[in-house]
Length: 264
Image 1: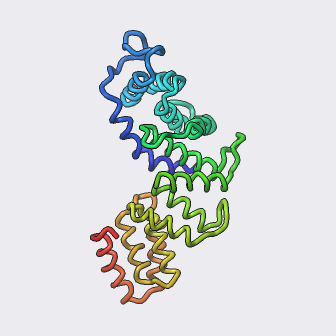
Image 2: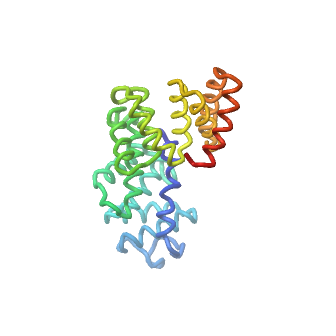
Image 3: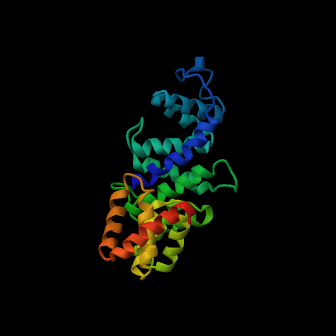
């Protein structure tokens, strides 16, 4: 699975938990804690999160499991992440896959507080389908991965999904090559501040002959990239710069600064 796909997105949804997990005593998971397996799903969820933050991951897993059995989506999501990363439990990608699948199959009501969990489940499943899970029935299925990215990109406007979908379209993964549609998704993602989308969008423009604008986008993207993505983005920009005139390079740097100020 592309763990980096999900790891970079977990921060987007952790705020949902932080907002809801109000103070809960960090006691062991027993009757004296005021929370037990008979408690309501939301109380179990809050207890599980508090236990997790205090390093009591065994108690967190137990609380999440009871809450998940009672239909609490956030607890299912938390459990799936713990299995996906081997966080407090033995890593089990197939178990994580099954839980994410359950979340995705439930769907989500517009404006629901579970929307973030649903989106994350879609992206997680897409990552699993890109690579498959060795030793399990889950085989690589690029068509399914592309469809899941499309769902998250189109229905929810998730910039990471738009970026991943565009990369698959450019590579012809899971369907035909479609440069124009890929440009559309990259343009939307880069307007949301996605550095990778900005870099790839600029590279396409450069290859199409829009030298100055392409170089400018690739240069501006380097000011936004994260540590993991900076190397390939920098290499892409340097390759394009090596094919450009000194005048184009200077003008591109100036235009990149303008793009940063304008947010275009």
